[in-house]
Image (cartoon, rainbow, N blue to C red; front, side):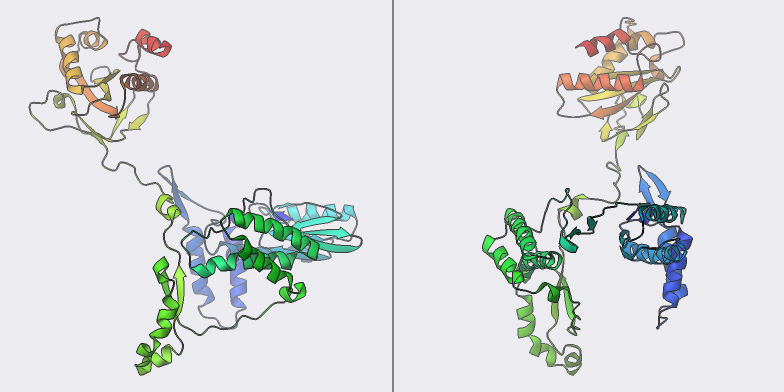
Length: 456
């Protein structure tokens, strides 16, 4: 059984109450249950995030990336499953759960199993289960258990989507980390596989995967052979971890620090020259490394910054500039036809060339999209067509209409790329004409010009 979207379906009040019950059972009530509850409420109920410039508040469940999410979900499910199993009309022979994955053995008839599943899915308003049923095989986490001849055989389960992208030996990690990868993976296989034949099969696959990632074949084989000699039952027994009293020295790893432990050991007498330090550092400090910044840290962001915080169109403030008399500083422009507002991407000005520009009429709000390699010359040409009344030109015709004049025109650069070719610039002009719907009768551009550009 599997809980459907557990993390995002936990009601806040029920999750908090489940945690309170667990905290109240602690032998040492420090910090207090009340303090922990307030902190939990803060994490759950102040979980806002931003998407596409808008703020949202998560009102149910918890984000999967939150550090407390697995423990929180586990405590909630522990409370839920206790109540579910107590009230169920029939109970499974065994019920094992890891957060939201459940392995269940059933010895009753199939009808009662169906009734139990139906009861489980109606027990809570937001927690639902998906079920896979088999008489001979069961997959739970990374194990596959198969019933063969009255005995259960265990093998490693690998999802089809697993790409086996193990840590590469060339990455920036302490050398002992790479030594532990083959041994740790071989130990996992030895614990899970119930027969030597299955262990050999899975370890051969492991060797192939690790060699593809850059590990030496003899290093991997040594780890595999070493684990093959261990008794599986010994590996399955829980071993009490030793308490390490050494004070850790936490630092960001760098390849030049690989001998740091030796350096600390050699210089321990310097610390022991102080009586107080002898009490603190009875043994050499233990070097503990944190991961340095990687490509993910440099590239991935939880929130996209404004790509052009200083972008927009700005005038040059030159009194002699004829264009600035028809322009003003702005970071966006509107289309009266579509009703949409568009942000200007880039820092543009009246001196920007190889660009797309927008002419708007103050009288009737109609717009004209144009392209040019030389903006000032192009606007001067428009000014000339208006003053000489060249009505065969769209801009000259429009601003010679009754009630219109040259001063009613505003100009803003809306797009620019210094590497555009003439063809690319004309293609971009067509794009903006279509997007703003600036062709007649709603705009100033001629529709036949737009159609001809489409054909070409």
